[in-house]
Length: 489
Image (cartoon, rainbow, N blue to C red; front, side):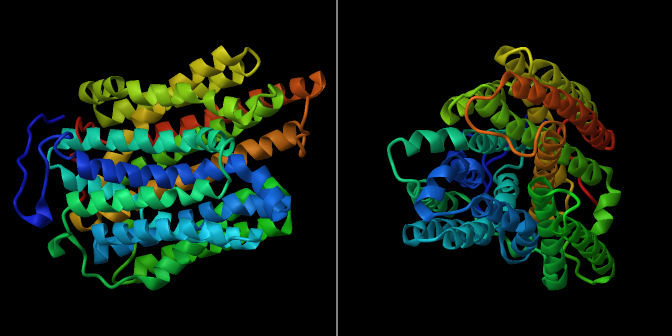
């Protein structure tokens, strides 16, 4: 990677920073925005029993308390990126942060599960306006490619830490406060992030945005496609893959996806220019990024069941058991950067994919050999995650034309969201098929624990093969760049 530094530009639309330290205000603000959006994915999961008692909610309603957020968030990522590339990334992020904070405050007025589900869906919309833009704005802070890579690394560490820490933070807080405060706290965090972005991130130059008309039909079809696909994954786990709701949502997602492709190929101003996928970096980074999320989501979901049900651990202890992942996120930077400098994106990403597949294979063995074996597999997996996620996030955004960086970041986040849905669905379906469709609470019998361990072995072995093919296959289409210079024409 290049080691040349830049000076701070005087033009407000092109303000850049010579180091991470010099950019600490905007970088901290963007990381904070990314953290609160990611932690909100998992924060309420630990509070669902308490919410159910307070609001008199049934199981289906509680599933939608978390599912509504994921559905609107995943469905609107591409649309939000497209809007930002037209009307200004900084402006859209500030609006998203303001809405996120204000909507979070409305939880104090919630009296029914339906109201909470609606609020969570609205939060997902606001989060969709934040996630892709935080990544694209990081690129605006630096001209130096090495600094961009390091800044993106910081963002990924913060975001993934938020995703992993959500249950731990939620479980610890619930011992002292009511569950509503888990959402109310979003408001001051969003306010601080708003101030940091306003002070440290320059307004968009008109030349850096696209003047194309907003593709409203494409936006509607993308929301329908991704929303139905995410719902199909959830419905398949909850209601079975042969249920009418699941089959209808799968069919709807396929038809909407085909209509989206047909429309984007023919419209004069497409929301997502599909010719970009002729670029191997765009195509490969998107595919490999989906592979990382399949791995992470499957392990996170599977280990929640493993620790809390098979081991009988408390939610807080189960959350703390994931700390090796966070520790590895923090210390794996020299390893990832060393791979990139020595071998370039393609080989480094292949190594990361091999680590992901190997870790899942190790998990298949480790589930019957105690926590230490599982922790070692978590460390190996996280090293692979750090390598692949950083390379793909940087390469994908940088491979986009300069006026389409937000849609590039949105594509990155959409691949992750789809991968998360696929990973969760795979684990849920395989465990249901191999063990039982209804996991009992309380102390498990030795026979059920043995059956569960067997199901986990098969599940992680299958996932090792799936993730290996996807992550390594995507990595092979990247270039040998040792920095982030893969621009599209």
